[in-house]
Length: 261
DNA sequence: ATGGTTGGCCTCCAA
Image (cartoon, rainbow, N blue to C red; front, top):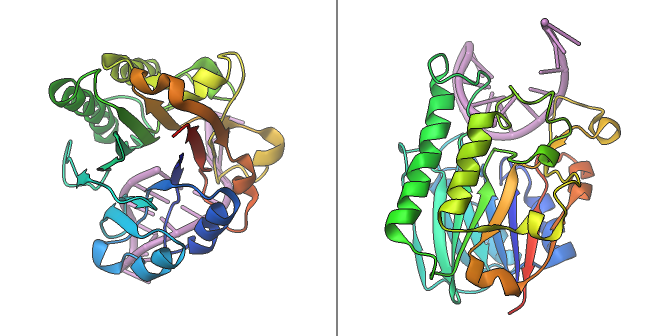
């Protein structure tokens, strides 16, 4: 089973790129963030035509919004509003696994909770998410947590840990909070399970750097965590760097986890 | 140290 997470940055604008992803990788489950469309305008027909019969989405006008496209019917699906009414989470149960798709707040530019309410919001969102899992789920459950978590937690998840230490997405407090969340139910970071900690791996390159390919100043903001009881089922991972060079790309690339059935 | 781009939508906000 192949599961993808991708911040698509407008699902309507990038339907052709979604089609390309599907043709090239045939994922069973596609988890999207920043679909930027209200539910009434969700492109149901176009996506059904791509072979995904089971569509679960939670959108709002202009901002945020998440979706899960599946070839397999979910036996359950639900939404948790962790902070306010922003559409940033949706969960499904597919086969024996509960998949949680997150779009964690980006947090604005200034890494100071007093000066920047968005940064405060981001940190509180992570606390609430962690608390939901420790209250409502246990280590015995089969769970996948994935999405645009908007934090690059480790040194080699960014092009320069030193130069980004005060940049939102890689500050000490964010890194600590994300790792605490991961450890609270002993989730395994699929990327670092396969890729040694001293090797660079990114899923995002800023639009603002037109020379992104040459300078390669990326960050690993998109993640797939699995519960420890799924450790043996992980087969492979890919961060599709090529997708950053597609026509009119998202600034994030799809990140794929392949599981043994 | 600074500014750089994109998407949605309606004049600028969020990323």
